[in-house]
Image (cartoon, rainbow, N blue to C red; front, side, top):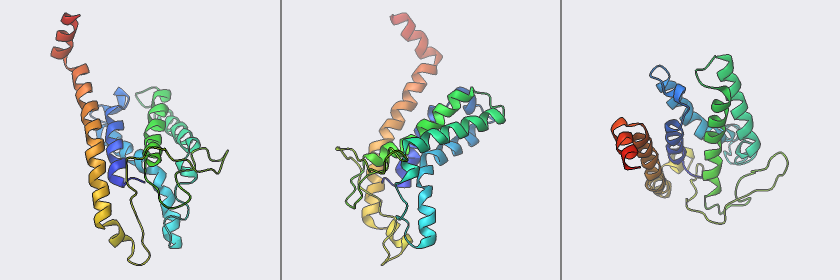
Length: 196
């Protein structure tokens, strides 16, 4: 799976694409935090494994499924409706579902040498694991029992994995940011209209 850095960059991309009412000045920090949390949330399945001494024991199972993405989207939209959010609750749910699913999508693109390979994409309807035939990310190793979690995370290969994610994902963030700038900048919009 990608590192939390890769998933956080996906969260930044999702933040840029948030429904307009969420990026109002009063909601800016909350929306940014929610974007990062939603993009990393599927890895919550590591926590029970940490308690049991093996973070991977439940990892890439039910929380890494389309079903979980949809349930999180429904929950967030209901929360928005309950809080009388300034955006339509359906927009909020679709945004949250897409952000959560961005994590699963990135995990599908990871080289995974240890069986079972991939994620349980169709859980609870299938316990099969799925992985993309084309992988562009290296796996991030959270835990080696011989050296402990902190030393595992700080290994050179994990740092190189995180660097690769930055190199591959930051241009996507930059493109989204630039396209949004072009679409909202009044001067650019006027020039584009004149060219038609």
